[in-house]
Length: 254
Ligand SMILES: NC(=O)c1ccc[n+]([C@@H]2O[C@H](COP(=O)([O-])OP(=O)(O)OC[C@H]3O[C@@H](n4cnc5c(N)ncnc54)[C@H](O)[C@@H]3O)[C@@H](O)[C@H]2O)c1
Figure 1 (cartoon, rainbow, N blue to C red):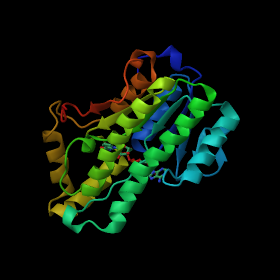
Figure 2 (cartoon, helix red, strand yellow):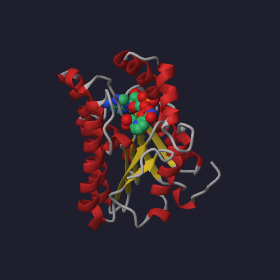
Figure 3 (spheres, rainbow, N blue to C red):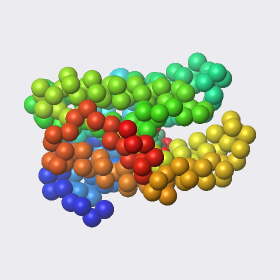
């Protein structure tokens, strides 16, 4: 990452989903800019914000409260909140179980609500004109075979982003979503294998299909997404709110 954003130095940044994939890439990118970053995830033990890691389950409001409180105690108000925690399940819509539906909606949609609510309340209370960045997906804008619960949950995230942006604009709090395309992460790897079973093809077939759908001719990296998160937190993005920015190599254009 060569671009530098001096205004991010020392900013208090909370990144959920930071133990893996896109969240890990975003946390690293903010650290590289000199921000004070706390990563939060299911698999991080303890609530020691000072060490840069806190445990949280985004689908549990009390857990989200505890994670924010731990960061506030160590560093003060969160100035940039990035919600990259997420999950997915693969099943055709007509086969989707209630448990699969609930898991996607609980983690992706409700988790985004809980994180954004807690971040916004603290920003309002401390008079912080902060930034809230939700990781949606191009699945917030299109349907995808075998992913109905996930697609529904990501449409919810984008609707939430747009509504929060309007409601928080008077406080100077900017709320945007990133809509990644096909990004090489442990989740994408698992989806190819599970999707192969659902569709009766191989994971390699899906990988080739993935690449063929991207105009830029390659799938994305976590750094591709992290750069846009830095931009959204930076002074360059001060007139941007309520957007769902596609980071898809041209695969989604609306
Ligand atoms: N990889 C892609 O192609 C892609 C594309 C579009 C959107 N996304 C979205 O980006 C986000 C990150 O995905 P990724 O590909 O890096 O996945 P990943 O599985 O590599 O990482 C997700 C992280 O979220 C954590 N997590 C899951 N449930 C949680 C919970 N309830 N509370 C706290 N943490 C939880 C996991 O432990 C994991 O560390 C997700 O919202 C995903 O939907 C990914």
